[in-house]
Length: 384
Ligand code: HEM
Image (cartoon, rainbow, N blue to C red):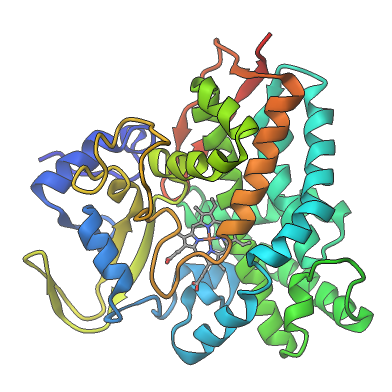
């Protein structure tokens, strides 16, 4: 059997044949290289995400080194309490007002300005900027720090993805962002509630200690920027190759979420996530020992033909109630509505501004990545 090399170009750019092979031949496979059980089938990934014997808590997790303590690394009553506390802030009612007052006007201005100079390099002009600006508005950051914040977060996310290895750099960036957050949180607490119609994150958590507020701020930074950039890049890549679906997203509001859900299944943003066994157990005929890590290949599960018929076909008409794009269980994504809403507004505005979008033929975009997947660059122009 071919061994899976998680940093090979083959794997990074076209993991689908390898995933299919492992799903069939060795659905739970121990990798000596990363010292984890790799889990490829939908049924096993789904079962582990829901199984309380698998935990996110583990000493010296890399995510804790990068972002400090966050919801991503917490279990138990405090984790549940904080999730419940932020739920109304990222729920439909609050975000509908945020969309009207912030997302629509800001994203429209950004897209229209970028569309004036075709061909557009979508990743730099739009995909990097929309998530950072929207998170900054929601968290109350000064917008003039947008570029700096994006660059700092990309350094940390590159470490998570195995692209960088300099620990001093991680320490320096973490320390700088942490001090910056301390200053912002102190200012927001002294200012009192905002005057806009929606609630910012701080408005729902200002009765918490500054330490807890910071945990939640870091959680949103870690969870919200890179992922949303990847969604925009993958969606623009897939849809510019499938223009009739791009047009439907822009013109048939009731179809937009189904189209984006299928983009996320077909070209997943988050390829994997990790859990640790809290006791020795059996799964799919394999013994997983207490303390061992399992690498859940969400991207492989998204193309598992036991769950999705013709999985290698992009088909927004399929039913996707069982998708794992945002995970399931106690750690399922809390930012789904936020990211889908902003992506829908961005792509609709781009299509409508140009009245049709197409890729620039001589610069085809390649979606690639280990933990997070996106095109490095994507050149687009108007249809006519
Ligand atoms: C397309 C964009 C996104 C994707 C694909 C995505 C995917 C995911 C996945 C798979 C998880 C679960 C990880 C695990 O269980 O180990 C997760 C958790 C999380 N996401 Fe997202 N996410 C996206 C955008 C966002 C945004 C925009 C935010 C914030 C506004 C956000 C906030 C969070 C938080 C706070 C968690 C941790 C929840 C917990 O551990 O209890 N995400 N996300």
